[in-house]
Length: 308
Picture 1 (spheres, rainbow, N blue to C red):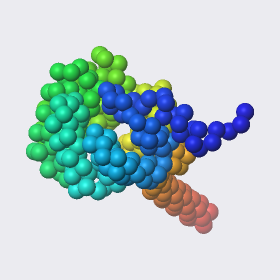
Picture 2 (picture 1 turned 180 degrees about the horizontal axis):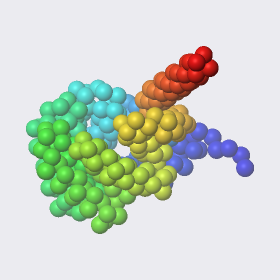
Picture 3 (picture 1 turned 30 degrees about the vertical axis):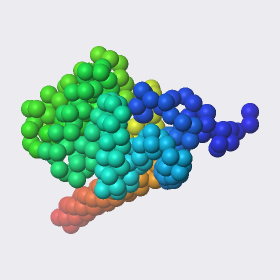
Picture 4 (picture 1 turned 180 degrees about the vertical axis):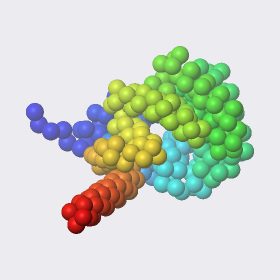
C-alpha cells in the first residue's frame, strides 16, 4: 500500500471530525485543514494557516468567517504564550457572536477569556467568566464543556486554598463526564483531580486516577493525552523516590511527543528524562560508594583478625 501524502493525510483526518472542536458549527475547508495540521502535531504550520484564514476572511469581507477565524487564532496565541493577543481576538469574536445572537459560541469565547485570566493568575476574573459560561453550557446540555470548566474551576480553587470547594468541583466534573460518557472531559477531570490528591498527600488515589486517565487516552488513541499522563505519572514516581520507574514513563512520553511533532511536549519530556537519569546515576554512585565502604570495612576487620 502506498503511503499517504501529507496533503491527503491532512484532508482525510480533517473529514473525520475532531472531538476537540466545538460540535455545533460548520467549518470551511481551509479551517478544517488548519485543524488537521493541529491534530497531526504541526503547531507552527497550523498557526500559519490560522493567520492565512483570517487574512482571507477579512479580504473577502466575510464578517462571520472573520469572527470564527479570530476565535480559532486566539487559541494558538494562547498556546504560544501570546496572552494579550489571545485576549484581544477572543473579545472581538465574542462581540460578534453576541451581536448575532450565537449564545453558545459567545460563551465559548467567555470560557476561553477565563482561561487567559487563569494563565495571568487573575483568578477572580477567571472564576467569574467560568461561572458565566458554565451556567449556559449546563442549560444547553453541553456536558463535556461544562465538565471541563468544572475541572478548570477546581484547579483555581486549589491554588486559592479553597480545598473543599475544589474537591467538589472535581467530583462534579468526573460524575458529569461518567454519566454522559464524555471520555475526553473524564480524562481531563481525572488528571486534574489526581494533582489535587497529590497536594493533599493521597498518592495512591492520585496514581489510580492517572492510570484510569491514561487508559482512556489510550482507548481514544489520543497520543498527546497519553504523553501528558505519562509525564504526570513519572512526576508522581519521582516524588516517591522511584527515578527508575519515572524514567520509563518520561522516556515513553518523549518518544510519543517526538513522533507527533509536539516540540513543546518533547522539550518538557526531555528535561524530565535527563533529570530522572541524573538521579538514577546518583543513586547508583551512592550505592557503589556504600558497597565500597562495606567491602573496605570487611577487609579491615579481616586483616585485624589475621594480625591477631
